[in-house]
Image 1 (cartoon, rainbow, N blue to C red):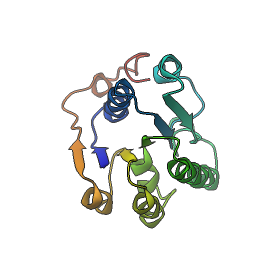
Image 2 (image 1 turned 90 degrees about the vertical axis):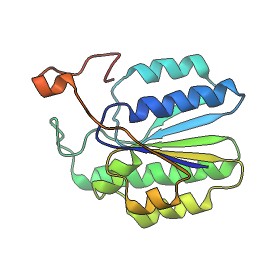
Image 3 (image 1 turned 180 degrees about the horizontal axis):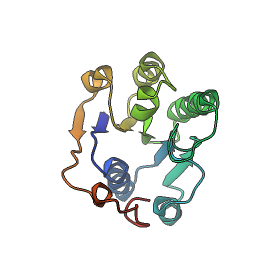
Image 4 (image 1 turned 60 degrees about the vertical axis):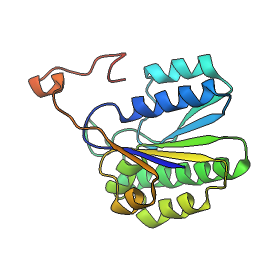
Length: 172
């Protein structure tokens, strides 16, 4: 199956991790490849250690692109995204995982770090028996069309709107 979680609300990655926990509980092996999240620590980094080796997160992104003090050239972000997609493709084809999550891959496409065609090539190559879950805002229509399940997370209210910063254990 191809699953897609998109929308402007908080909870896309969290939902994907919930799906991963469910799959691990059923004896499946899950890999999450994170495309935008950088090298900083988040709660899921520590939590994944409790589910190893059945659940693993690999960060391939260099952090937020063009915001929050990002000083890296866009080309470096694009290179990291392409390397992340190549890594994910190799892992999908390896037979070592029952589910692969491409976390924030939609963002990488929206930002122009990856093309829709590049990601569609990976989607089309997914072998029988491997589920693929894509997350991130601004999902391209092509991803929506090929997905078997599409969920949209809508922001209704968030403390950020009142100027509050993100909180550890909630936003990261």
